[in-house]
Image (tube, rainbow, N blue to C red):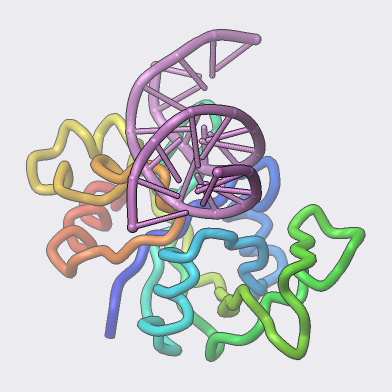
Length: 150
DNA sequence: GCCAACGTTGGC
DNA sequence: GCCAACGTTGGC
């Protein structure tokens, strides 16, 4: 089983939103590296750190899991969607995604500043490759974040 | 709102 | 295939 971190802007879709709906297609990923992680490496049951970005206190706020095989991101086909991509079609989809389902919220958010301050965690892509919206997490990092959020 | 980092596009 | 222009991400 693999561990991941996935970013979401809480104004768009927060951990509370995920808790409410239970499961959600992870639409709108338009970065090849992030897509490739979903398409090539994610397995049903993989565990996900849910991270709030572009907000007052950027932080890991909860845990989710991968709930589907990868499939075409339908939002790319919808001209009304802000994720519309004319270069993607149902016949030849450019973007893929997985469904994510809610597991739990952390007792307390693990903030970006505390992650940066933690020697065990400042190797994370979150710190070094800050613009990557889906990234792998090692088991050590996973355990450390959960301990800090308990 | 600013801006640094960095990915994508397109002309050549 | 290079690289300048441009767009986006995301912390601050």
